[in-house]
Image (cartoon, rainbow, N blue to C red):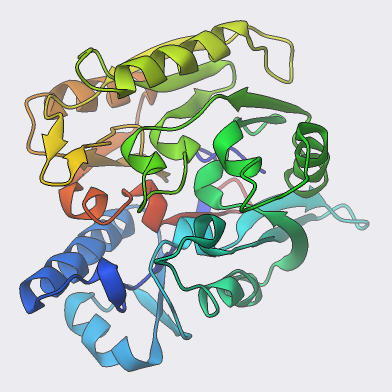
Length: 342
């Protein structure tokens, strides 16, 4: 699996179609659609965007999306493409050419959550693989794209609460998971983080996706969400994450350099502790699509992202409507790597 910062062919997304993602009122629904569209348009500044839309939403989606956003039609349950779509990989074919693959993980609604439906979403990985012209690589591992981050050189970050979740993969051991990650995404070193953020571990969360906790900025360097207010339970979580990374080495045997990126100052919303995180950004060709929260630390986060991704333009999108629905910018996008360098 290439690093997210490698060149992309395009980014894939899915259009919000119903349930809690749209909310209870027309105003809620418009907010969701407008936010998904804002992320799509920010991404399209840098690379092509393909949007999967439910048949019932094709005309509606086009009213929010510019003509440059390509539409693909398929039935959907939800709109978290990072999790329901495939994870793209590349390999060298027998004829020496680079081949695009798409790992189609088993998806069961983030561990058979009582509020989730997934019969339609479980088919999206295979459909996107077909549309992308990729070789489908089926996996029996229940996993989501938000549950992994790679450095492109054989190292993968995961959390024990996701891949070893008994409602995802009952009976599987760490060794079992590592063997499947080696087979599917070429991971030769798996770094196990203890857990994800508090809000994400509650009823409407994923039980601890890594992509709001930590990400590789380059091989050997990990950007880590840091909660410095001890009144927030994530302060303890992020200390545990840092401790695990301090003990880890990557696939090349290097110690991990840790770069903290502080959490926004807002600690709670109407539902409880927030999990607002600047780690949940998307790397695009020549840029970064970053989360903003109308917080005084937004500018600090942009400065850090510019420093760790030199030469990339940082474009921010208000991610509060996404986090209120259970995710962020990274969660609703999935990059397809380019098979050429130009």
